[in-house]
Amino acid sequence: MKNWIKLNQVPYLFAAVCLGLFSLIAFQISWLTQSRQLIEEQFDQKVSLALGSALSDFNTAYSMELEFDEFSEILETEDNAIIDLDRSQVTPAQLADLEESLHGYMTCYGIDQDYKIDILDNIVNADSIGCSYACSLNTLNGCCSSYAIGVSFDSKDQYLFDKMKFMILSSILIFLLLSGISFFILWALIKQKRITENNIDFFNNTAHELKTPLTNISLALNLLTRRHKEIKQDKYVDIIKRENSKLAEQVERVLFLSKMENGEYLLKLESINLKEVIKEVVANMQMIIEGNNGTIEFDFPNEDYMVMGDKYHLSNVFKNLIDNALKYCDCDPKINISLNTTEEGIKVLFSDNGIGISKGDQVHIFEKFQRVNTGDIKDAKGFGIGLSYVKTVVEMHKGMIKVLSEINKGSQFEVYIPNT
Image: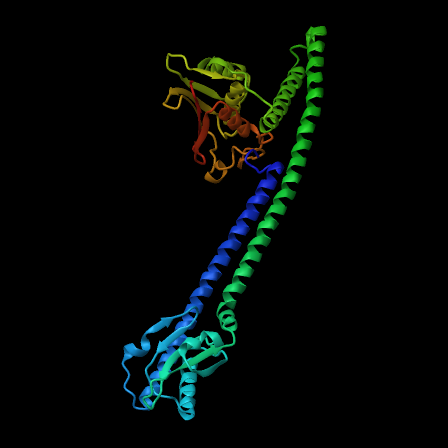
């Protein structure tokens, strides 16, 4: 519960989602722009190759010797590919052959855009009349005047769009899909979080309402036993007292976790001896241990294990771990408690011979309201907040807890508490 996104964090999550989508848009635009430039360069190269190949065929047809370097040299202009040739004046019949040859090469290179061919007085004039591609020709009769043949397209946009339409369409679909999924998840998260918080508020309010009658029952029972001392040892009075105490402890745990999540609780730190705290907890639970035919062994070296901690809550931690070892056992419980000093601080190890915890359940046992599969153990009771409470208290002491367990081979809970 503690790791869930709170409602006041939703605006930040929304901003993060928007930032991610805007980043995706920017990346897609950059990718499409670079792709357009690459396709346009390929288009220019194809036109230049088609024009060069057509002129080469033109020269070959009219028995003109042509050095490859003469027509392959590209003179760059702003968006033109210009091939310089030294040739004679072109007749209409020759121009028609050149157009036919050029059309064949354009088709071969996959260029099906409309274009037109013009004979220019000078190659310098190619840009001024809108010819995108041009190459120069000299007269067939050996005159010195220079002519140019120019190829112009109405627009390259249709060609570029045809080549990029799949990329554009896929980019739009991916963006819409990711946007829809992101906002659906965000909406579902907000809705689920509101439902969860309403449930938690109801549960906490119920716990508060239960606290008052439980306190009154305890006070009334104490007054009753004082006035009628003969019933003090009555077994039914003992049952009422014990069950009232159990329920009061559960209510206190719920309220404690609620205060912890809201940042309203501070530990009452003092110097305590963990060895003495554990022994005191075991002594207070002696009747419960004997009622379950359980035995507890201590492995405590002859030294003190002093830490700065909250005695009340650490006592509840140890009590909860012992109580779980007693409940989740299908035979006579045997519990071993040991203390050791490590680099991290003091390690308290609780080992038992219980039914064990599966690997899948070990991932969730420290979450609030989670209950493990107890198999044939039918009388295991609780709200599923015990180990969540344990983990919260240990982490408040800047420590940590971990579990090592196998099914039918018992469990080991290792609690580390810093000694500084």
